[in-house]
Length: 215
Image (cartoon, rainbow, N blue to C red; front, side, top):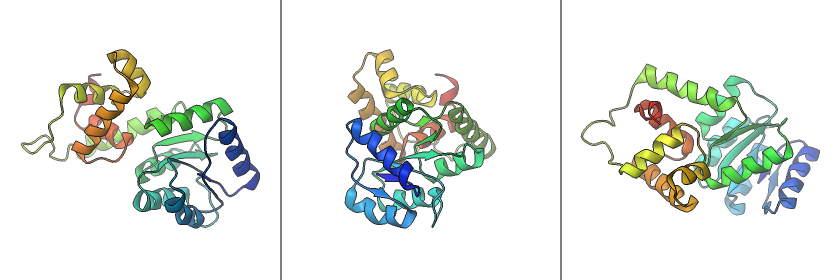
């Protein structure tokens, strides 16, 4: 689903996706429409602009996470401001791409988002990881290291470390000589055990527990 209030831009994005073989199940011009149709359209990926006429993309992301959590939100915005990026990620977006990105970069980001990767315009990933690290150092772990901590297998922990360094599922699969699907399954199992919702939250967990320092 493509959400953008500029008709020419919205149509161009939808056309690029269609020509690349994606099924564009819906488009929306504002946040209210996006939230209204998402449940019926059931998109795997929502390409979302931050600047909407009736609400911010951050609010829409938060609403989608509540109303239709299966959708993965990829923000496509003209803004590269630090606060906009962090607010979007904290609301539940799993990726953030600038509108200045090339068509091939955009299509690759959509594919990776659909696969479950966290995708960011170069430079923004370091920003997000840095913020999560700052929060972790300031707030510390939340007690998950105690007796009730979920038990991850050695393989799940190994993959979690790699996820925290920003490697894609394909890169992890290549390094561990596993299939892409096997890596996805391990990540999904880890998310379930840790009661997390997406890869971005998984990275934060890894940082809070010192796993990101030992890839």
